[in-house]
Image 1 (cartoon, one colour):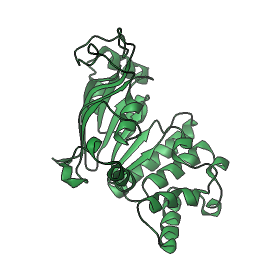
Image 2 (cartoon, one colour):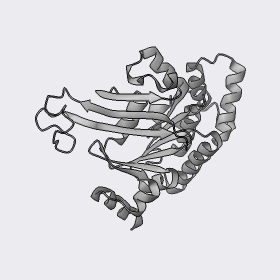
Image 3 (cartoon, one colour):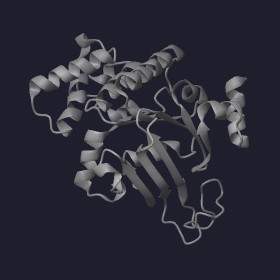
Image 4 (cartoon, one colour):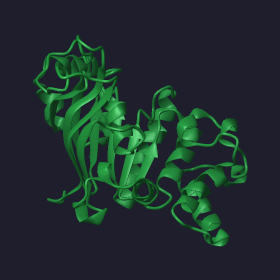
Length: 279
């Protein structure tokens, strides 16, 4: 692990609703993650984290804990109300990515970040061929050479164990596990230094889950991409992540080495998670 992080995030907050002077105070007592005065939902509240080059950071929590909103904010799908977001690969980490122009944000998304969504419909065009889906990411990053794009697309899909004789078929004809593989191929098309994965095994059969997770682990080993993987399943996090953050009510309630959290959880909620994994 390198001493300088690939991604640094400080004090991220994402709110749904107008907010008020009461809930804008980080010390305010909320009902879960809802403001008792104005009704606003604080999906993410004052979250800070770092991801180092070549590591996998896991984020675990129950449904509604804010973990998916966190990764969507990092991929700039949702707008935060507060936060400082630095990427080593963008201006050597000197700029807050949340404050840069829209064209620069698009460039960062296309060239420096990859995203694999829980719902493949968010990451893929279901009516286009799988080859066109991967090529779309290359085109967004400025590629125009058809031969080079075809070679890269074929190489990626083959690496992800997608049958090349189906390259012209649309993802809607594929199984859920195969759709996730196509999403991963698209996400890594431009060799981004950072990859975000949001609940990528949800809804898949156990055997398919295992193959997808093995694929993720192999990509990380082969390409050295730093990853942030979100899951409600601590077993998934245990398999992949060297460090883990536990979220509840939009906040980080515990973080540390994954082995430490599994062996000696401190927060009562984390203790319940670990107990459910071991029982």
